[in-house]
Length: 128
Image (tube, rainbow, N blue to C red; front, side, top):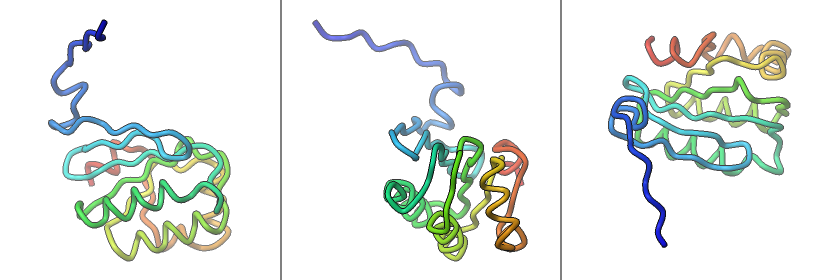
């Protein structure tokens, strides 16, 4: 037997007509918000598992002028994550939303918080 699809709620489920993309690992949901594309990152991010997030940021930079990276769920980030943010910043208008404490600390220690655009929430990053 086939499964019955659940009903969709316009505006709630489809984010401006584009269904969210879901992934595993450090890469979370991706969806349209206002005139931006949101990518959620979570968990421990290091050079061993950075690949899917790097690919998502590169693809988004090629197709969207503004990218919002929701880092509220990031529990650890190393220098490879910082390098990825700085490279993405060069190719798109990157907005770091809701930085977790580990992300905020990494950005402050390295001075990258003065280069990258930080926002307290995804909603605010999507509006500006």
